[in-house]
Length: 205
Image (cartoon, rainbow, N blue to C red; front, side, top):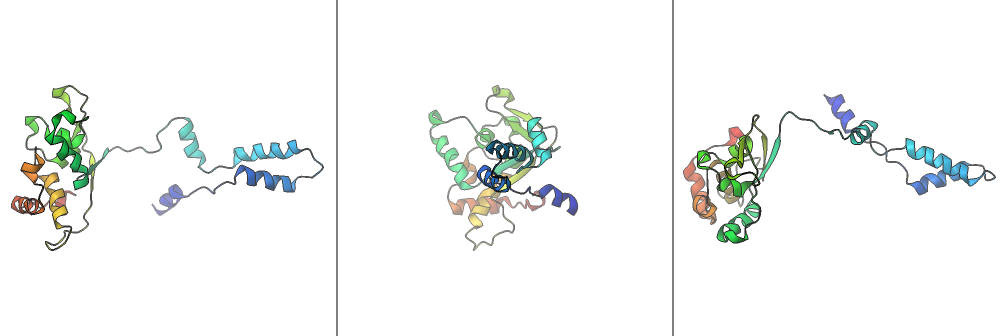
């Protein structure tokens, strides 16, 4: 495993610039030789020198994927900054743009009423351009969800991050349709809602 990781991460030596290469070749050429000889050597070396590996070059030329995986990775950002435009849009439906995943989740079918946001990201795909009854489709293989912001430890109640922690966990593990009503905008309400949920999600992340 160490050998494979080292080989895969090995960087190619950075090649010289054309100017540096031409100056080097000009210095080793016989001054009495025609300048075209130095340019020919320059062209030859530009075909040999490379900044990326030969395997990667072949994949790019053949339009082959550089990475293959049997699982789909989904990024889910539940920070307050991400939800600000969603909250704003709820106040004026006429100004709403193309729905993104979170807005689509709040407008999900009633058959998905008890589905949490993280379960929706893990087990469903959403496309606002599909017909109304087919915007959500179940995945055949569950996706791996990367959640941001990440908390490596549970903050204490006295920590400045406690309210942010409660906010993110509520969004992930409490089904909601309206952020102000179901989650809360004030830090004290958010904390109270999370503590009343009495849910420990750490075994899922």
